[in-house]
Length: 176
Length: 176
Image (cartoon, rainbow over all chains, first blue to last red; front, top):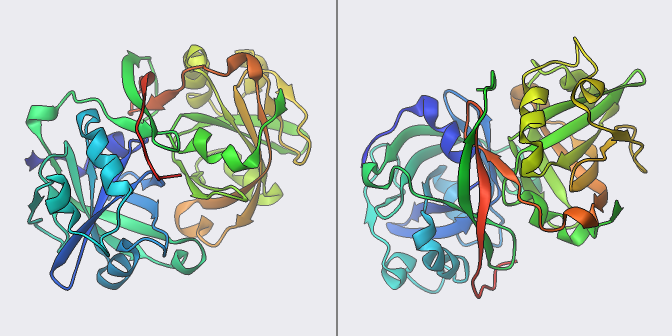
């Protein structure tokens, strides 16, 4: 994995791909599947996400205020579903599903080696956590896998239905 | 347009399509392009979105606490960019770009006739508006165009680059 510019992080999250979210608590790493997230600001890149208190990851994220958001390519779709269908309460999901945790640089949560993008995040605002499980995260370090530069991502439409990226169109725009 | 069940609204927003957001202030309707939004809860459906105070829509949304989120199909991509490149300060974007405002049932902001989904929303939590322009919206009424049931949506990757929905894959999942 190589350094990825923080100024371009929004281009990886704004299209709305399914992501994996990793946390570490008591020296034990966990990973969950997440689709409820959005960009909040360009730079430093801020991301909002919803982690329900029904998720095992919730307590770890609230306590450590650190996580990694990792973007899987479409070829990992079946692992994404397995991660989403199980709980870190019961199993080590990295071992169970053949995902490789790699130490991050700025946070205690691990990167996911198989993913095309990894974003090291710190929670900077937890005012809406009690009401909605809404965390505001700052991306403090970003990584990209140069071998997966043009990989297609997946978008969750509910109940295990995913839309894979199709064609790309480029229109003249002043939008960032 | 026909009634669309509130319980299924998350399936339209969770995949991360570009949307249009309409507001009405002083009897004048406006529309902006938005990609920074996410689901917050299933039912009643709650959506979070970022509307910068640099957007002309910001004051109308904050004042009226009402808006419509409309999902355009890929065939509207060029209009979506035109809406994103202009400001309601200067022009009537509905008239300028051939979009048709239709009265909503529960809010003052208009539906967009050409879109496949229209969600009437009320802002229910503005605690993070000053810090990030983050509004928590409750969807109070939803509409779908039955003639566009299988329409493909678009996802913004920055700078006028859009990914169109590709193939759909269905995996066995316990995820909602």
